Image (cartoon, rainbow, N blue to C red; front, side, top):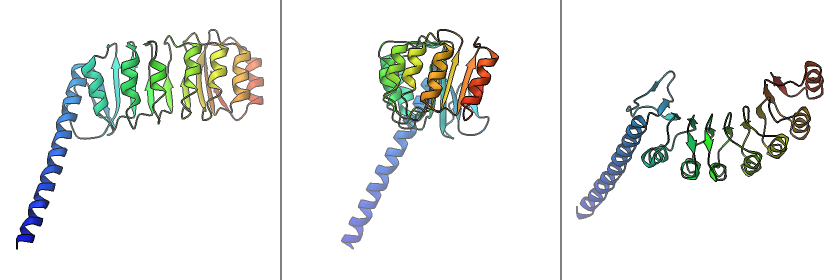
Amino acid sequence: MRVSLRVLFICVTVLALVLAIAANKYRVRHAALAIIARSDGVVHFNEADSQSIVPLELSGTVRRIEFRGKQLDEDAIWAISQLHEVKDVAIVDASVGTRECKALSKLPSLSEVSFFETKIGDGAIEEIVKCPQLTTICLSFSNVTDADCRRLTSCTSLKRVALNGTEVTDSGLDSIAELPSLSVVFISEGPISAQGVETLLSRRPLSALYCFGDNFGDEWWARIRKQYHQCKIHR
């Protein structure tokens, strides 16, 4: 009887501990979503067509968080770090630095990051490329540089890189060509030359290239499409 009571006591204690841990995770997640809501973050749930400007629901898996025109404060950064299921984070028309990217890089499921029209601070790229699952990074219309492109090469999991609307030159393209899994690139009219594009395609067999507002000419593109037929080119 004493043994049975002891076993029962242990089982009850373990169950109470498990419930306490679950309740704590529930409270932390609720607090995180509430902070993101107050920070004007748009949270996209896994369910189709389920999104809310004030996302206090706890059902569903949070897959995407978007901040637009908002400087992330310490609370918002902490809140993001608590949502371990997040796969996609977008920061639009804002600024990011080392502290934001360091927090993002620790999310175990994060695979897509967008810094669209965003000012990228010193040290930010070095931190975000530490994310082990990162496959997509959008730097469109940001202040990303050729030096940042060289830093991207340490993230060997990257497959898609968007550089359209930036001041990245042929040197930056040459750097990202070193990415072993690179398959999709977005570029646009600017410092990038036709030779830079051709060098990229010759070094890395892309599956798709998106080029916006270029002036390379239809004949040149016809030759490129024929020569690199495995790559779908969109203009």
